[in-house]
Image 1 (cartoon, rainbow, N blue to C red):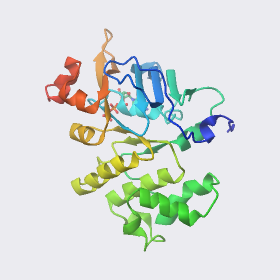
Image 2: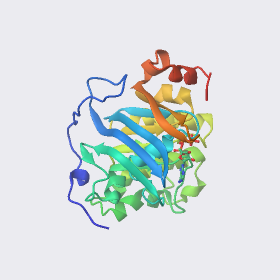
Image 3: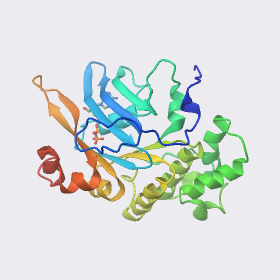
Length: 287
Ligand SMILES: Nc1ncnc2c1ncn2[C@@H]1O[C@H](COP(=O)(O)OP(=O)(O)OP(=O)(O)O)[C@@H](O)[C@H]1O
């Protein structure tokens, strides 16, 4: 794998001010860490998502909502090149991170995924100790300094330290589902990403564990930018600052394509949506 010399390996210390987005309802005072510009994602010849343009604002939570199959996960995975290993998967348009095209030839996808981490639907800890789960990414990324301190810091930020500090050498698989998900968040945080992508992180959890993760998501925005896919509109309303509503349009050939309908501040999208399709969806008339 070719390494790269881009600023993907250094964490900028200041907010990047990008030009305003063309998406209706977005803020004019834009402070985005990422920008999608006319992004389409294909699986072979099938265009799963068409022409998505939206910003991802720094230190904010952006939720992606919409009916099943509208392309939320596809867009989420395009943000850190997680679709790359899928045969035939292809992205057109620009996915910009601090203004840099993540799909440019000289960009190392491994570095992209380090700076833009991912937490999955089902907690997926390694069959290793709690400590080794968190230390894993640090070791393979050659992160220097005291490993113990980094592990403690990541577990603290993931609101898990107090529950596990006396059993760090025990198997991660012995933790509850909610604890496992917070461990996966700690594992992601440990390598110091800037953006954390979450694909329905609470869908396998009970309401109490879900509430803990939602509180944590809010806390994490002190240090990170978060993009979350959720089926749960209440969850999007509770945890996010911005919401993107996607739907699936059917074309003349009866093929479905995901489309971004509306991107806006969450409060506005849920109380005063600009598009009738958004209104129908959030009021339960569709989807
Ligand atoms: N690996 C793949 N190969 C081919 N088509 C795919 C692949 N992954 C997703 N798709 C298709 O792309 C479209 C968008 O799927 P995606 O999973 O992104 O939607 P979603 O909105 O996240 O759905 P859900 O809410 O059900 O998870 C769907 O038509 C799906 O069948």
